[in-house]
Amino acid sequence: MPKKGRSAVRSPEEKEEGMSAKQRKTDSPLCFDSPSSLFQSLIAPMDVNQFFQQYWEKKPLLLQRSDPALTSYYQSLFQLSDLKQLCAQGLEYARDLNVCRCVNGKKKVMNKEGRVNYTQLRKDFDQKRATIQFHQPQRFKDELWRIQEQLECFFGSLVGSNVYITPQESQGLPPHYDDVEVFILQLEGQKHWRLYKPTVPLAREYSLEPEERIGKPTHDFLLKAGDLLYFPRGTIHQANTPAGVEHSTHLTLSTYQNTSWGDLLMDVFPSLLFDSMKSDIGLRQGLPRSLLTSANGSSDVNKQVCMFLRGLAERLEQGQQELRSSEMRRDFISSRLPPYRLQEEDIAPVGKLPALEDSVCMRFKEHILLTVEPSQDNTDEATELVAFVLHSLKNKRETHMMGAHVNDEEDVDEEETSPFQGLRFPATHLPALRQLLSRERLLVGELPLQQDADKLGLVLGLWTEGLLQVC
Image (cartoon, rainbow, N blue to C red; front, side):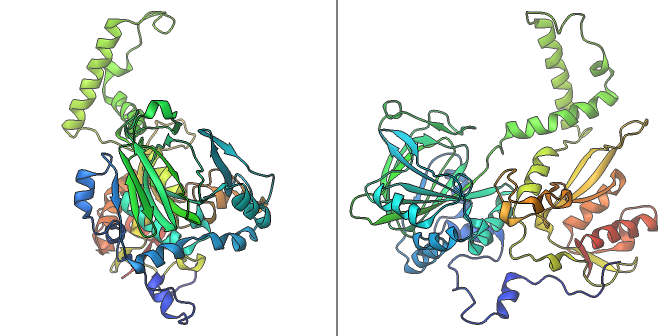
């Protein structure tokens, strides 16, 4: 049985109260009161509603700001001088950073083998004018962890980052476009940017674009320390450090990869059809003979599929069926950052065991997701739906956005690497779970479950996982 009587997890602000003045970070010009307030402060003085109405997925936004406090704060996020200490932590080429340069319109990768030697890295930077592309610095920088964790709460989508350090009169990458929404924060020096009209608006893939195809820039400007640039996925761009600027350091924050309506439809359609086939005998009828072996398409088949799709749409509009997104939710929750400064002891059970007469509240709401999925039990009975409470509290900041790479043998432990951290409940518990997540506090005895044993079992399971406390 877990220990009782633990205090609730302390907020970052409460934790800093116990730090000395030397340890405490300088006050940030960003507002961390909530995910929305952080994003508002990030794009200030632009209004959030105006941003999403006029710029998001539509056109670039350039915010040129002469704010010494913001400039100083941006520089503290990552700077060239940080590389020496970081290299001492065992960085590896390709995994942790790339060394590259744009030569004659093509990307030249100049990586060495194995671990990064700082002396060699600076030699390539100073003498060969190579760009250093540092991957996912939030793994090492606390303040970037803090920013990106809040942005993932705001967007409901993964937020990755890269740092680009480019010496003067050099360019790291040729013209290209990305499959992510991009926010550029200029941290040090200056960089000359050119943006071009997309050839593939809201692109789903990264691609290079030859100079002769992209035409003249739609935007041509100099980004200075403290400035911010946003552009939608698909926007063709290139950037170089101009002469007279010792070097440029900028941070790229990226989000909304594979987070489109099309991605949602690919996610929900299998479960939608699975549910519909239970009640629609037409969907269970066999295909015409030899349809799969026929070399030619059939207009009759197209008509029949259109009829099925219209039937699905009608049932959705009438509320007879519910969309169930599972793979996108699982991918997000299993890959996102854990809460800022969360320690292992913070997710232990808090306070006393909940009882029927207690009011309870959920912890870490922004890091919890519900999914409804078919049971994976191997039984002879018909497949039933179950509810999963998934969370990101046990995710590893050190592997955020790093794919399936395993750093050492300790990471192989199934419990540590499983992307499905969470709890399973019968589908009948779903209304109670939704109430717990939507309300500030709720009396256990009033949960919409018939049996008191089910009410207590639900809250005890959440309490044991560190997701609920008596309040």
